Image 1 (cartoon, rainbow, N blue to C red):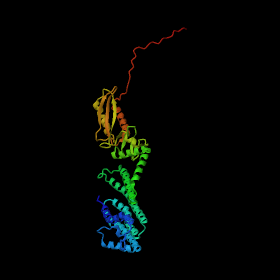
Image 2 (image 1 turned 90 degrees about the vertical axis):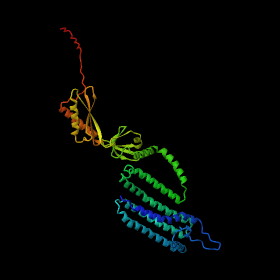
Image 3 (image 1 turned 60 degrees about the horizontal axis):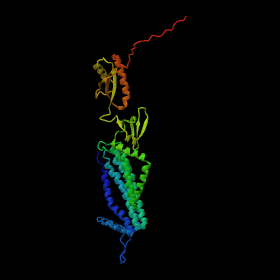
Image 4 (image 1 turned 120 degrees about the vertical axis):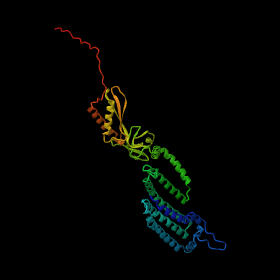
Length: 418
């Protein structure tokens, strides 16, 4: 995938806007608080736009324009509003037309969707600079001017936050589709990164808004800490499930589609791995929802894990003493090889496990493709083995008991009194 050129263009735009916006925002309120001082000779105060301390590299025409706006506040305000509105529309045109042509050459549509998301915030940001200059040019009262700039800047922050939240999901989905290059971002970990990213974005936006309005966030953080402790005690079970879900997603003892068995006896197909719970679908088509805190402390047998998804089944077969053991071993192997769903690789094998009380105990080991087929194939294999052993006249013994009677007592015959 080619690297999108969108990022480069956005960086250029930000680099052009920040040197102009920073002095206006950072020093605007300070300039309002300090009234223009007149000299002892009665000279006029410096123009308000000049009081923002333009950078040294600011072109001379810009400085002259600021002086003209100061001399003609109403007309200058109109020129600023209309001019920056046209500049904002021009920014939209550049993004949609010129940059879109560049991003259309890439092999993904993620950059195109990101362009559509940032179109509106860029327009609002550029137009905000014009409105800020206009509010200064009108020489509004200090408190009112500061409030207007704060409202406008807050609106800008919310516009970028509204674009960043869906943009985060787009980027995570795009990285998840290329998990071979980004192993940490997979389908199972996307919800975790999505939640963490949203918390960071919303927290950063809130901190920026506090800074805009000059609010000290320390008392809020202290209050949030006290509230967090209270909520932690009240919802400790929910929080336990939440943190356990994070650890399960990070550690990945199982994933969607795996067939697992817990030490408590639950066995089924994993259909959902969430932050709070995990869902299993049993062979009886019953869905079991297990809290993640329970699974995190349980012993998990992942039948789909390991080198492959194949699973080995063990079939115990007993035959009577006196039969040809080599012949029995060959018969059992042939039964496995002739079955359609028994894997030829690894090949089936037969082992003589011991001498029982009534039988020679064999065990047939064979591999199946999916753990979910274990019950069905075990049934079919036992059926085939029973039929073949009967056909080959090989006895399947069962426990028998011989009763020895040493003496049968004679029954007493009553005398006939007739």
